[in-house]
Each structure stands twice: as C-alpha cells, then as structure tokens.
Image (cartoon, rainbow, N blue to C red; front, side, top):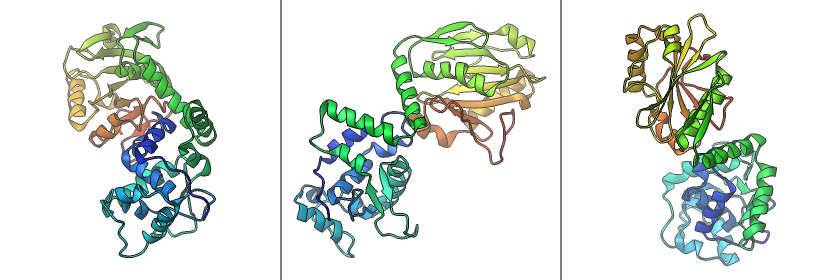
Length: 356
C-alpha cells in the first residue's frame, strides 16, 4: 500500500467540498452535505486514491465511527480498510450511519455525484451487483484536501482542477448561477422582445423572470411577446391589454394569474405560455394548472393553445428538489442555468404545444 494521505477533519472536508463544487454544479446538494463529506473523508482515511491498490465501498463509510476516525496512525487506518469488509466486524464506538445509508452513499454521493463529476473513479470490471469496493478518489481531486494547502494556493489549485476536470458546460453553468446571484442584489433591467425595457426589484425571482423574457422566449417561441408580468405582492409590471384583445383574450385582475404570460404570435392561433417563477415555492402543480385552465376557459380562449411552464434558476437547487414531485403532468420545466433545454413532463415524446 502506498503512503496514506494526510487528513483533514470531516468538517474541514465539507468546507472544501463547498469551495470545489460551487452553486450550479450538477447534483451539488448530494455532494456538499455531511454524507458527501463522510464519503470523501473515509476514502482519504483508508487511502482509496487513484494509483493505490485500495478501493472504497459504501461499507467503509457507513461503518465508520467517531472513535475510529480519530485514530489516524497508518496502521489503524490500514487495519480499518481491510477489517471492515470482514463479516461480523464492528469498529469501536458510535457509528456515523446505519446500513440503510448504503444506497444513498452509492447512488447519490458516488455514482450521481462524485463519479459523474470526475472526482472519483470506478473499477469497471466488477458486476453491477457486486458488493466489492470499486471506488477511488482521482489523484488531482484528492490533492485538494491536503491540510498544508491553504489560502491563495488552495484557491489556485481548486480553480486548476475545476478547469481541467469539469466540463465546459458545467463551468458555464456555474458562472451563470454565480452571475445571477450577484445581480440579484440590484434592480433587474429586463429587455422585452419588442425593444421596451422594465425594471424589476432585486431578488432571485427577478433574475429568473429576466431570463424567461430574454432567453426562454427567444429559444422556444418563434415570434415572442410579453403579455403580462407581475412581482410578488401582485404588483403588475407589464400588462398589454391591447395585445391581449388582438388575440381574443381578456386579462382580468385575478389572484390566479401566473407570474408571467408570454405569447407566440407566429401560429394562426397564438400560443399562450403561462409561466410560474419559482425562487422558493409555487410551481405549476395539478391544482394550479386546473385553476389556470379555468381562467383560460372563462376568458373564452382555446385551451389547446396554452402551455404551462415552471421556471427555476437551477436544476440542482433546493426549490426544484422541493417542488419537482408536485409538478403537473402536461407541463414543462425550464432552468435558467440550462437555457437550451426544456423538461417535458409527459409520458409521450412531445414538442412545445398547448396539450402534451
């Protein structure tokens, strides 16, 4: 076995993970929580690093104890790496996790998290059903947890690893999220398709609304226009009654109006796009969809020329994870961080239309 790496505490590992994987990283939430830090710490503890013969399995993580983690002599660490795989072995002390965390460690922290992002390698010649250890930290990634690496030197190493290991798309996604978060502190200037501008109050909802009008509408609508925009507190920022009348829609002041209504003027019967902006809560759920459909029917507009879109800042963000289970079938989800993609909640392939 090669020399074991120097160790940070689990808490220090967690702090570095949050620097290495900034907002906008795919499945970041699974990596920068305690379970992700426990996984990386344990890999370092047993020396499961690219170039060694040691491999990590979920069992190494969920059988770790506070007392074992404090034993940092090489022989203690090497002994744990081997003995934990033996039947009936129990490390002294209080375990970090129960056996039931095996799947979250394997599927979330590792396969869909660290492995997918190139931070962890996986032994490929084992059957998928095998319980044998198969994971090791990539050498460059493991080096970021050197306790001697601090300050500007650490920041430089992290940036170098990100540039070399994360995809261009992932880096662009992170930059977009960081830029949006910074801009959210100031008034947000929105450029409409017809050349007009409006200012929205600072906040994440305004960042999403801006992207919805400037990015979503130009990507997914042939001849886009903005019919209606409101801010929290029911403040109406844009309301084009003349345009609404020209397509046969009467907009009534109503509590069930969505955050934003876009319209594609290209089809013979224009396509209305009802958009809900989710910075914290409020997606197009089944109840919300039904209310919007009723609003359209009451206005006498053909329901098959209406689409429903829930808009988020990022697919890995807490608001999306919190609300995804309540999104209505027959609707769409769109993410500012991935502007060219559109999530279709349908059992059949479809394109943007009134009915999926």
